[in-house]
Length: 370
Image 1 (tube, rainbow, N blue to C red):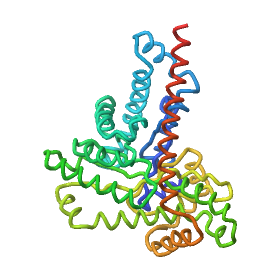
Image 2 (cartoon, helix red, strand yellow):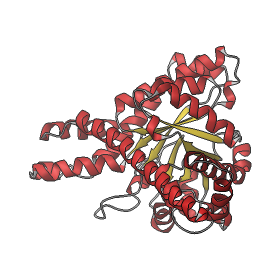
Image 3 (cartoon, rainbow, N blue to C red):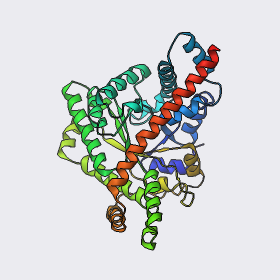
Image 4 (cartoon, rainbow, N blue to C red):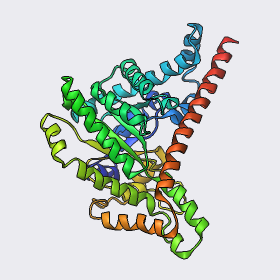
């Protein structure tokens, strides 16, 4: 039985993707259940998610033992295990991929975050991951660093669909959309069928509030505190305004005529970090057509239980959103400083999770050879 709240969200134009992946979710039938009961039409993963999945339970033990006995090193073992999980998840979502003509039914896997500042190696690994998963509905996640932008273009030019991750600033988001359009133009010139290429741009939400709220508390004035919890939504709404602008230009029109698909905004980091805020705030207040909301399981269940879905909550709010960012500057919070910091921290967090993943798998490999 489909949940009425998640159904309403889907009907409003929001694709619900789960921000989680583990062998347990695949093998227990939980993913299939979420597809049926929670309108889940896609899934995202990242190094932190894989690290959590591989560090608990015993579902990976047999594969770990076999790969270790075959003489694989830890990097190869991690590559094999993660691409295997993504491949199996892709198979579960394949009917949705086919019924939505490639828009949904997507599963994302991220390039090694240690490559975030190396364009050529990012492109090389994007191709390796795409070939290893070997499923049409995989999305390769590439971070929106400065080195990531040309990597996005080059990967799209190869006909590979991309999930651009770690976007915090409006300026960088516009650069991401430009990188996508450049990639489509090159793909078209290379003879690729543009209708088969898809992309989402993952715009992070709650982390913006976490950092800005901390600064507002430090300022301590009544005027500053009144702005708490407003930056993340304002930033995302202005991102949607930028999306509407870019995908209504003559440049886009030419690509659309050639069969291209829009690069949809994806709301990431939608779990509320501050318990003072409603736990479905980054779902209820970011409803618009042609967007994805990738939710942690806890946020998904909160939405199903008590989400307040009341139509479009984004368009028409741009002036107020702009005012919020202006007011933040007015009380002494630098938007540019915050978004630059968040990008740096985002890459660092993924690198740390990757290191923990390698350490955890190394420890398990040592156990099976002991």
